[in-house]
Each structure stands twice: as structure tokens, then as C-alpha cells.
Length: 129
Image 1 (cartoon, rainbow, N blue to C red):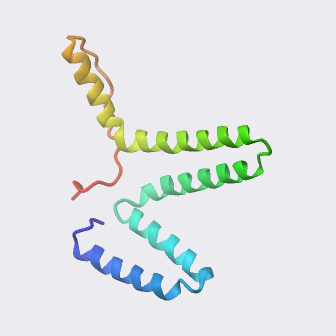
Image 2 (tube, one colour):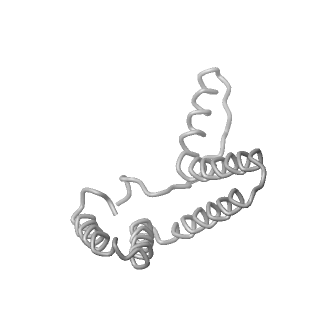
């Protein structure tokens, strides 16, 4: 779902009004926002909802581990691992192609040709039709 579309305008209006009305009732508002977020993310390609679910579950598990860690050093390491996992997922799914192309171009500038594998991994962007 692209932002400058009629579909997004209707979706935004429904979610905004629903959120506004349900906010005083946190027990209803939280699931509503969660479902709206999944619908928005899955609108582009429903298969990526599993990636969103993996990310949410992983972050929840890390949060519970951080909460349960007794030592401050352990909490810091767990936080660093959490950030690393999230940046790793983002880097792999969103920026892999950019990094591989950049490395290949840099090597080519030094007359070092490397046949780097360019996988077709993509997350939602404005260029999808």
C-alpha cells in the first residue's frame, strides 16, 4: 500500500478514527493497532507478514531475556545482540543488493572483477506496481 494512493487514504482514515475511539480502552486499542499494522505491512505481499512475526517474536524474547538478566553487563550484551539481529534482518532484506552492487563497483574500480551473487531479496518499496 503506497502512501499517495486513495487506498492508503481510506485505510489511514479508518485506522485513525478507530485508534482515536479505542485509545481510552487499551484492551481493545492494542489488538486493533497490531492488526492494522499487520494489514498495512501485509498489503504489499502477505508472505512478508511471517518476517514481521519473526521479528516481533525475536524482539519479545530478547526483551524478556534482558528483563530477566541479573547483571548489567549481561543486559548490555543482550541489548547489543537485539540491535545486531534487527540490523542484520534489515540489512539482509532491504540493503543486500545495495551492498553487493557497491562492493562489486568498488572492486571493479580497482580492476578486480568479482562475480558476487546478487539475490533478488526485496521488501516493500515505492517501485512495486
